[in-house]
Amino acid sequence: MSKKRFYTILFMLMIGGIIGYFVILIQPFVLNEKEEETEQEPQTEDKVEITFWRNYGNEAENQAYNQIISDFHQIHPNITVNMQNVEYNNYEVKLRTEIVTEKGPDVMAIDSPYLALYAESGVLTPLDHYLSSSDDVQDDFSEQVMEGLIYNDQQYLMPLIESSIALYYNIPLLEDAGISLPSKDPSQPLTWEETIEMVKTAQSPKDGVYGIDPAQGFGNGEAPAYFKLPFLWQFGAEVLNPEGTTASGYLDSPEAISALQFYQDLYHEDKVAEREIPAEAFQKNQLVMTVLGSWAITEFENNGFVLGEDFGIAPLPKAEYQVTPNGSWALGMSSNTEYPEEAWEFIRYVTSYEATKKYVTITGDIPARYSVAESLPVYNKYPYNIFAEQAYLHSKNRPVTPAYPVISRAIKELFENIGLANQDVETSVAEAVETINQRLAEIEP
Image (cartoon, rainbow, N blue to C red):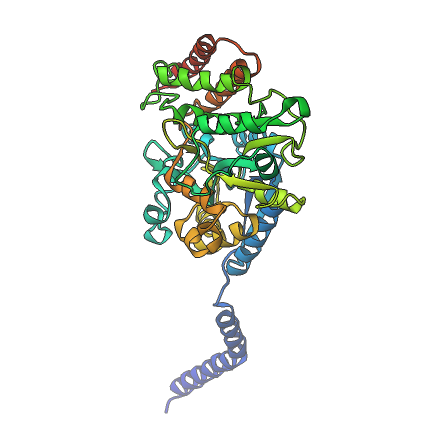
C-alpha cells in the first residue's frame, strides 16, 4: 500500500471518529429536547375573558345569575365571564354610551322592546348563523315570544324568561263586601265592566279603602308602556301600521279612542281609580285590586302577605280581546366582540333548558321555554299557570322599531295627560301621533 493511500484512509478514520464522538456527545440533549416537546404536545385551550352586562336585579335574580355563571365556569374552564351589574335607571344610558366608544360588553342583556334600536345601529350580531337544531328555537318558544326578538327577519336575542301581568285582589276586602272571588281559570278572565262593578261595591274612599290601580299608576321608565299598552290591544287598537311607518289611523283609530276613553273614565267618571294612593296600599288592606307581574308573589309572601289568605290572583281583565304584554330581558352579542364563539357559547348556556330551569326555580319568573314550564309542576297549577298561559297564548309584543324609545315616552305622556290631567282624549292622542310620526319620518327606509 502506498503512503498516500495509507494517510488518506487514516485521515478518514480520524474524521469519522470525531463526528461519531460529537454525535454521542449531543444525542442526550437532542433526545431531551424531543422528550420535552412530546411532553408539551397536549396544549390547553387559550384562556378567554368576556364581559357580560345586565341590569342589577332583585336578590333572587342576582343569586340565579351568580349560580349559572359559576356552573358555566366549571363546564368551560377556558372562558371567564366578567359580569357587571348596572343599576336599572342608568343601564340604557351607560350601555349606549359605551357601545358608541366600542368599549361595551361582549354579551349584554337587552330589554326586548329596544331590540330594533340596537340592531338598526349595527351594534348587535345576528344569531341565525350560530343557532342550530339543538337550540330548539322553533318548537320550544312561543311565536309571540320570538316575534319580539326578530328584526328585519333576523334573530338578534335569545330569551331566558318571559313576563306577564295579572289581576291581584285583596281577599278580606272582597269578602267583607260579600263579593265572590274571581275565577282562577287562566281562560276565564273577568271583563273590565265586571271588574269595575266589583270594585265599586268593595271600595270606600271615605274610609281610606280605594278601588283599583289598573296599570301601575304613573311611574317612569318602561313600566308605563308595558302596563298600559294592553288597554289599546284589548280594544282592538294598534300603535303603528303593520309596516311600522305611521301611527296615523292606528293610535288614533276609533278602537284606540274607545280604549283611552275607558281608561280615563276609571279615574274621572267611574271613580274607581285614584291618581295617588298610599304606599303599599294593597298590602295594608287599603286597595281592593291592583295589576302586577308574577314577580310580586314572592315579595308579598316574604313580607307576610299570604297568597290564598290575604290576596288572590286572577287573569288580567279583558275588553274585546284577552291580551297581556310580553317581553323581557334577553341576551345579545356585541358586533364588536373579539370572542364571538365564546360569547355565543355563554348565551347558549344561559338560555339552555338546564340553566333556564335553575334560574326560574330561584326567581319564580316565567320560563321562556315551554319544556321548562312543563317540567316544573309549579307552572301547571295556580297561580303561576295564569302567568304562563297568558304569556304563551294571549300575549303581544310592543312595537319592534328603532323608534320605540320615542313611542314608549309618547305612550307614557298620553296616559298621563288623560289620566292625571284629565285632558281631552282626542287632543291628547293627536299630540302622541304627531310625536311618533316625526320620529318615524327620521328613520331611513
